[in-house]
Length: 187
Length: 189
Image 1 (cartoon, rainbow over the protein chains, first blue to last red):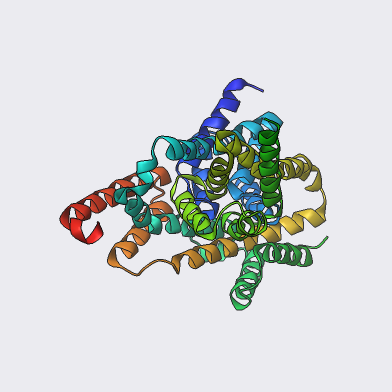
Image 2: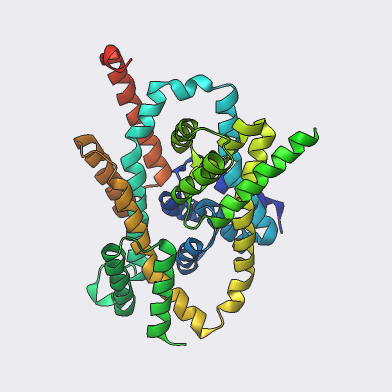
């Protein structure tokens, strides 16, 4: 395992963490782009599968995805370096803010800027959703004949369930879609 | 010294527990953290808790990590924040490592393949649902709609790098904020 690869993983996830506001789903697309830009290849299918899996495992999404990608790229050390990359920026920033930059938190300019940027963060979530849908159901083509009908059916059923029964948790929805997959594609 | 160690261990254990029972990320976590450190251990008052959460949300980095760092620091300084972060990260690190190690073997079963294909189709629903839930908190103003649509078009259709989009809009938002503060200083202060 080359040291360069480990440092690369650290760097990529450090950068991702630094540009994460709020966390969660808004980072999906960011992570995918940065991995591709830095030649850390994870196939679309396994990436999106993992986004689903991580919904039914404990812990923050950003940590899960870093550990997973790090391991895929460079084994256990890779997982460690990628996770470290996610953790360091907020750790350092919060400690700085608490010690030497206390005034920053009281500055109106800082707070208002972060409130004003929110629509962008929310748009990032929709972009991730659209990209996943585009890849999984439409198979990345505008030709309507290329639609994966089975995937579309599963998507549609889960969509109806999600909006009809608002109480259904993410874990339940993921397990249901997996179950539908088993029913349709067979064992 | 011994007291300090015990305190750090306690912070670690509480955040380990929080990391272990949080499914599906940051916002679920808020209520679990509150349950533990406000109601059960009474480390912080409700008001202090809400203040800290609000600040943690606005700083860069995944919400769970910033929150853990904040509470750890407030309780026991820099070492406290290390134990909190270490605690919150460890459960998912171990779980995901195990899954990553075994997933390739699991994938040789048809059953698992079908299950994963189903998951692929369901994931985008979860993502859209989260997006819709968050957008309900947004005020419908020209500026918000403009930002939302421009970002969507730039990122989805023109595939512009997200960090570049973020940087441009951060600068724009900051300029507007500064301009408005300068224009109406009495209203805001």
